[in-house]
Length: 384
Ligand code: PLP
Picture 1 (tube, protein in one colour):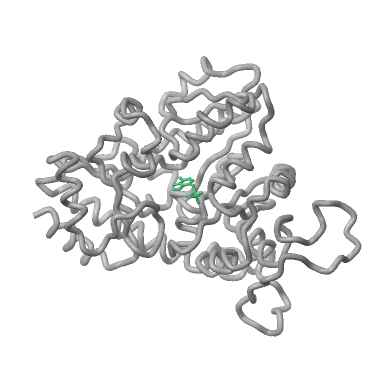
Picture 2 (picture 1 turned 120 degrees about the vertical axis):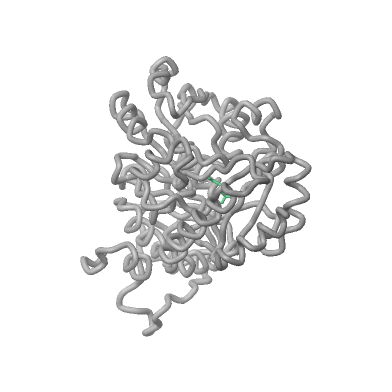
């Protein structure tokens, strides 16, 4: 990477982009080609083919992602779940054990709970706020500790420094899903994590028009994960790669704006008589506010809240909103609202959801880049 790209904003625009510019084009063209002329490549992994993750569109993204996360290397994948599953399958074998934070994204939770045991990989859930309880969960076969920067939808912030220290002390590979923070708000590798995975479908792309994933880390880890991705096949196609790279260029502008708007909206909701509880680590009332302030540059664009009227009120309220669409996903330019019990966490049994604090009436709002005043007016009207 050029030494001129010192700051994140410059890296977002220029890192990984081909120089000299192709045909003088200031935006890299879409390389809509599955295969490339043979140039004497010696190994299977080096043959230039879309599934081998080494075509121009993919390589440009690898360079940009590595720069943003301060990683030696990076890899893009066809979805966030492809990044997570391929990463874990590259790191783990039959007989291995994973320590995973309680309340992970539903897809990751299902992967660990329902798919991995058949491969001989087991998982123990850990309370990420109680480091003193982790040692008891360790096994001689524990290889990986897996957490999220902020949990979905309660925006819990684990003791991430303790996770890194624990991983070091017990020779575990520390993996973090950094989707909610994005590298604008948190850079896990600088804090000591080994690998950062992303659903690039969210903030990195930012426009809710593709699904994609990413993983960033050391050259050794990424080489292992790339080989696994080459055979599992979850590779990103050139058009999605183009959209992702274009979306990423405005990441810093979007996320900083969303940090500010979401705090304003969280404050509005917290002060409203119809609202029972707001979960946003940027609020002084959030139990992890001090930790989030110490770790993050901002708390991102997702908050969750409960209305005093419970599930029925939540449903009625969502239906009355005019700006946010009632739709799953997050991190885009458009505001979206969901009831996690029906979407991201529907796969969890009701008792498990209750234990985690995800009530049926909990609403999750992903704040887009609309004017916060318009969003607050819409929320206020729907609450009336
Ligand atoms: N990780 C987190 C935190 C998510 O919220 C999601 C999707 O909602 C994923 C991973 C999975 O990403 P994708 O939908 O791109 O496969």
